Length: 148
Length: 136
Image 1 (tube, rainbow over the protein chains, first blue to last red):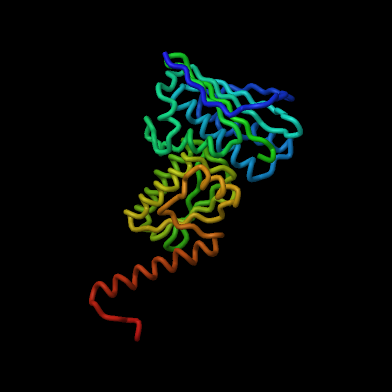
Image 2: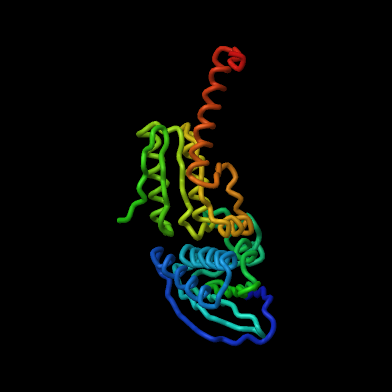
């Protein structure tokens, strides 16, 4: 069993608001994206950052559906110092990712996709963290700062 | 079941995506569009995505597929009206939509399609009998 972490999160983070949402079927994706958009709008995130965040959310939720048979998402409004942001957590109980380094490479895919999902998503957000245990599941946490 | 309408306008097919697509809807659109190209013998497909706020890698792939499929059915595809934030996100994501023609709006997209078909037509003439029609 392998446990790997890639983390860039530093500093104390305060959680201002929490919202849980299960995503188990394709039709849940658009409502989830809309919920993320609501929170991003609420904290005054600009349109470009919003679009990046929602696109990243869409990629991750799609991964969760395709490879993890769905799971649970957590949308949080967080603050660090004077900066506000949105933190998204995606938890599935799927097969897990045996080799995270490989999964994080551009162009790698076990499915029939372009293999842009994880590395592309990482470029779109401020902070990206992935933990996976083979046989138990995968958790991805991303944060997008309002001005980040 | 929801469906994205495909309108026929002369030699072209016009698709306006007004809602955020979920996967099944996008896949249906891909299939419907190729069917329509075959049925109508359309020479061009114009997809208006001005109301689409998110294009992720899946949607990008569908757009690319539509363009490639139409191409081998002898129809050009032009995507119009992409929002600036979507363009920025697509490039950062690493999805440059190569092989897909784009234009700023429907009007410019139509003009581009007309030009493409016209240019193709002229090339065919030149190929056919090797004559230069430019001087006539």
